[in-house]
Length: 270
Image 1 (cartoon, rainbow, N blue to C red):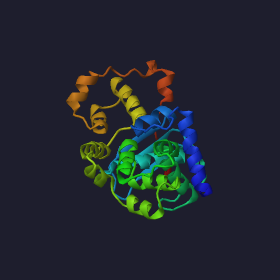
Image 2 (image 1 turned 90 degrees about the vertical axis):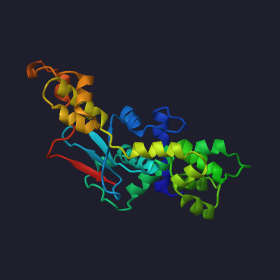
Image 3 (image 1 turned 60 degrees about the vertical axis):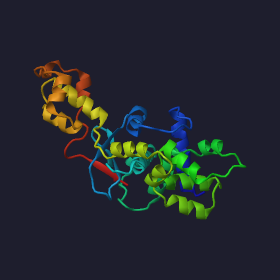
Image 4 (image 1 turned 45 degrees about the horizontal axis):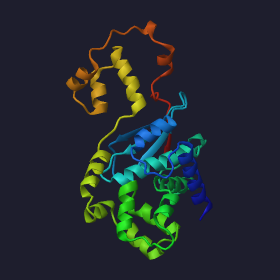
C-alpha cells in the first residue's frame, strides 16, 4: 500500500471514529457532512464531466461542497466523499489551489479517503472470514448495502486479497445498475438515481434565506427556485413575511453573513 493510499485510509478511519460511525453504511451524505463538519453540500446541474468542487470564502471562512447531479448515484456519493477528504486533509488551506483534472498526491489521497470512508476494510473483514471467498452475489450485496460503485467494492476486496487482480478488473468494470437489475434491487437503484439526479439546496444557506424571507428582505421566488417548489406551496408553509426592522436584528443574524461574497471566492477542484 502506497503512502498516499495509507494516508487516505487513516484519515477516513479517524473521521469515522471521531463521529461515532463505526463501520456501518453511510446513507445521506449531505446530512452527514452538515452534521459532522458544519459544511453545506449542494447538488447542482452541471456537465457530465464535472464531479465536485470544494470552496472556502476567505472572508467568512465558510466552506461549501458542490457536486454535480447525475443519474449515477454511487458516483454522486463518492464525489461528496472525495471532497470531504480534501476538507479534512486541509487542502483548502493551500496557497496554490489544486489544478482540476490533475492526478496529484492530494487527488489520489482524496480518492483513497472516499473508498475507505464509504466502505471500511473492517466491515469487509467481518463479512468474509479467511475461509470464505466472495462471489458476484457478495459484490452486489456490498454495492447495495454501502451504496458504492462496483469499482470501489472490488478495490477494497482486492486490498484484502479476497479476490485476484483479474477478478478485480472484471468486477470493477460492471455497473451498479447492471448488478441492481441482475440481483433484484433495480427498484432501489432507480430511487437512488432519481435522488442523485435532483438538485439539492445547501441547508445552512437555506435556513438563513428563510430568515431573510420572514423578515421581508428576500423574495419568495428565490426560495422557490432553490427548493424547486412552487411559490404557493412555500407561502402556505412559511406564511407572510414580517416587515423588515434592521435595528432589531440580533448579533447572531449579523454573524450569519451571506455564504459567499460576490468577489471573494477560493476554489479547490477535483
